[in-house]
Image 1 (cartoon, rainbow, N blue to C red):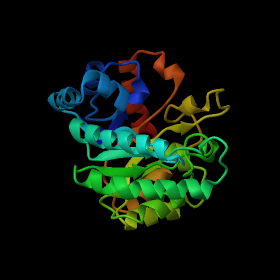
Image 2: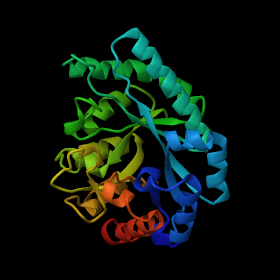
Image 3: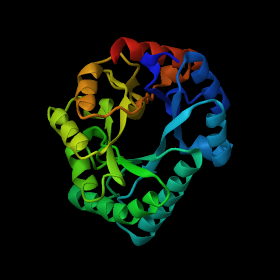
Image 4: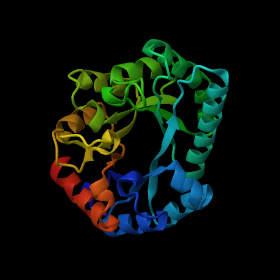
Length: 277
């Protein structure tokens, strides 16, 4: 592995067309030593088996996606969400990562109270953070671009994410700095500094912002270098805090999924070197 690629992690969803063995093989051939995994394919393959596969391939698992969806207002929905997140914590520990990414959830049907929904997230974190800590897993709150506030994540900025995370010890709850979701925010540099000062940057992710957005905006992330995001600018601010952890490329894009997965991994590595180093 080249020293320039030593911090790159390829998130599994970037090449969702690949099986876990194919992912491991593709990363090895591209000189990438780290991966982020997703729960559904890990569950299908077998949690401990998936962790062993990555270990045998010499790969470090940088994160597991995802827990969260903690905004239910009814007791039954809340209980289901907590049970699912405890399972996600166990799965993260099982595949050998210390970081579980949380997408907090949108507004329940008929609900317009963003502030109340965020407080329900905080209430859930109060139950989940000690459970995760006991298993060696950190919870990483990922703020999503405001276009997802209604249906996927009521936490839209790093400031909002940190307001939640800072209620708990830094080793238990931190944040994800995802370039795709925060690049537009003129407060992002200050909030990155805030997160770093508190030791709360648990994950740093890359994907580009391309327009026009597709009809399914969730899969509108661009290959590195194809859009508007200044990755070096964000990386400088993240690293100015002392963060020296993995940098994870997480790109949801149907055109990438339609291509040869090993080719995509190699291209991600080349784009990372060209646009993020």
